[in-house]
Image (cartoon, rainbow, N blue to C red; front, side, top):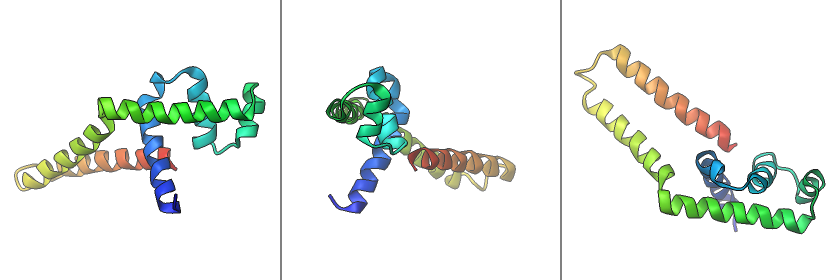
Length: 122
């Protein structure tokens, strides 16, 4: 897997984790968070969680798979992106009819939301 695809995969999984982490088991959530978000090694996590490197690897893989399955069924991540695009389109379409202060506040809110999502993904 090339570096760009790896990065895209990590970003996607980070977003899905934000959306669906509550639907993972506690051990899956902790292992995924420590490995994929905190960038700890499997061995470090095994020592922290009291298991083997292989058991942590299995937990992380099951968490990743579960996140992808949840998105495939629920589609919240896709819907959220679509809604943001729709809001921006509506704002641009009616920008002449809306108060400029409203447009500024809406764009600020959308930008903050995007920044928060990017910060979670890094």
